[in-house]
Image (cartoon, rainbow, N blue to C red; front, side, top):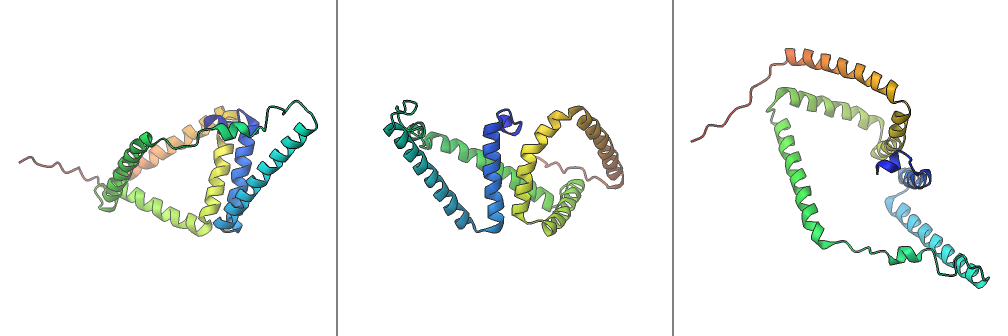
Amino acid sequence: MCSLVYWENPIVSGVLFGSVLATLISLNYYSLIYVCSNLALLMLLAVLGMKLYTKVVVMLGKNELAEGCPLDQLAAMNVAIPTENLDVYAKQMAEKMNVGIAELRRLLLVENMVDTVKFGLSLWFLTYIGAWFNAMTLIVLAWLAAFSLPKAYLMNQAKADEILSKVMVQVEEIKSKVMAVVPVKAPVEKKEE
């Protein structure tokens, strides 16, 4: 994945970036069923065109494609989902969900005032983002950022690190001021019986 967002192979990165971006923008204007059916139809037409092209080239006696269709490699791929890995993935997903639920409970029941205030401020900030953008717009912006920010950072790493260090110093100052004002409740230790 890192090689894709750093554009190490521009053709593969460009195809993935462009196709997903076009799909996301289409989802902004059309229904999911419409977009999926048109994408499937487009893939079917591309495969039929490739098969027709291969057939014509073989009939004309060109030897470049005499061994068969370039899609034969795709047809030979194993697409079966290994069932032995499903248990591992299900356990990992359940563990992450349990950690997330426990953290949400901790935040909602105000076990730590500072963390709950930060959570509340984050939710308040999200209300403004939700009022300004819909979910698909945010997904499109996230996709654009995923393919542009890593490369931009690599190209301007010295300047970006300098700015980020200044921002982190200011964040730490604000955090220390807030921590000095807000009383922190010590965690309650459970007594053993």
